[in-house]
Image (cartoon, rainbow, N blue to C red; front, top):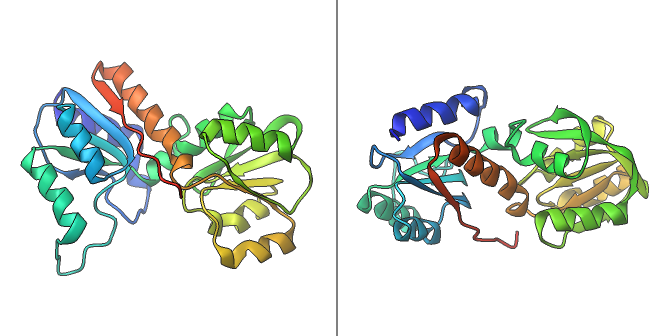
Length: 247
């Protein structure tokens, strides 16, 4: 498939123009024009690039790309940035990244999909995440088990609110600072990817339940779903590579 046609579909499907992001959404590194195979993952790394080379892919699709506002102005490319870029260019690999558009998408997004898998209904936007309601109240213990199964890891629970909940908000990734938006929206439980020490006592004093499921793990669902969507729609092989992070 022609790279231009594939990117045009991606950019429109994810509606990238509506987001003010800290990074470039879409094509970040220009490689070969024809795409036969894609390797995908959550975060760009040397390991992921080497996997793409081994798999003879022409394009790498990620949530966290190479350029995240960390290049000095005037530009200076050095260290891991230089090494990753050199490897991409040497092997004529395309790098495509979608950050906030993949968090917020209602069909293949990290947050909407996770809440649907947990059985929530009536989903509504919550910043770049979503919130919804369970058919009936469930205990924190039951939900803890479900969320650990969903993300495949132990989670951190701050049981500062009611022991049974019905309305849940979820914002994936580095989102604990958005807890006030979740509280203002009236959720009983806020699920996020990280936790900043400076806000723990504020959350406790507010009386909000919070579960921390990991930055990486809360952002695996969207890239997997987008990979499956592309493979099904265009009959292009998309291989998702899991390189877990403990945070």
